[in-house]
Length: 521
Image (cartoon, rainbow, N blue to C red; front, side, top):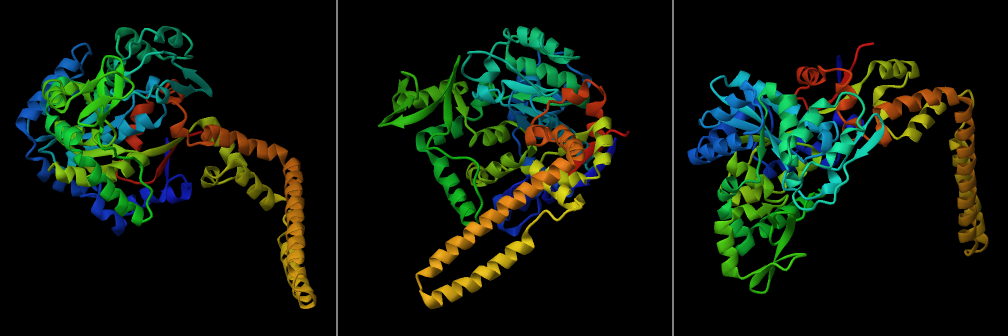
């Protein structure tokens, strides 16, 4: 593979909020503790030294239970055992339980934490760094996980199940598995072996990444939720979180940053069986929306103490939950995740929990042999392909046409002419100025129409070349979007079983640029 890197700004695919973070703009520095440079992890290591031994023991015990029906690699087993000791720390990424891993960037997230752990191990050989994938098993947005795209075809898992998706049964996968082209055995084994979606996801992540020691954590467990009881009490009963987040959001908005997530008075769902629904206060008591469940204040406090597993944090408090149960140094996520974590530092400070380093995941584009050959033939720079298709076409035609296709000079002359006419008309009768202005706009509109028609004619002359450009654009930016947000990794893994190993070799977790990986022609 050939590796090239493109500054994020040249891709035009990232919001200013995210770009300001990776460029360490002073305006954002109060919203996090430590920037994600390898040498800065000393600070987080110091803060996490006080992570409770009891929490480590609980974590290891739960992991052993969750992995009981999964064949452990020596790397994963060793990492789980290492978490008992105060010299072991995690680097974590999280993601929904998309079927068949969903889009490519799921793979890039896990590769990023693997490589971050490798780098930190070189810098701190006396410490153990464990890559963790946190399953969003309690999420209930089935629509966001039900489909994936392979070779241009969308495959969808149809089910009427409700509640936390990690608890969904996998029986209905049988018909979908029969439709998948090529070698998808890793998923067929996982979905056939396990009855719950969360267990199946753990299985295939273990098969794909077990050799690298990736540990899968499912937060949907009573023993882990027990450690979160003080936070559940404070948020549900006292509503302490909302004021903290709203104050931060106000500061960010004053800096002209658009916030990502909304905080509620209560930031927990009620979770049981096939139900995950919001808890709201009603008068002196509480209700679970879309159900008949009601609780007095005393009943709610008792429920929190006796059944914390029935309380599922939303996007506001899930990060805090993760940091309470893991000896975690950094969270790895995409642009939207980086933004909403930056909204939460005051919540961590309030609960005296160290705020993790926020590590942007790797961003990548994979170019196959045949696409690379077409790309070279078009003569269009790769960075240009990040633009909208029509912009690319217009730019190429304007640069290569033997004819003048734009009307800029004529537009300038019309503007000057009508300005002079307007002045003469207004000297005669003030009311004529508005009429001349309207005629000016009508003339300019006609010029634009002429220009569009000439551009279309120019495109017809160069139809063959534009067809080649379009083929490359469609291959690298399916449906007009970034490849990593649309295509599934099987597009490449089925052709190259070393695909993940090559990603681990080439992607740099601390190089905040767009990585372009090209199969050599």
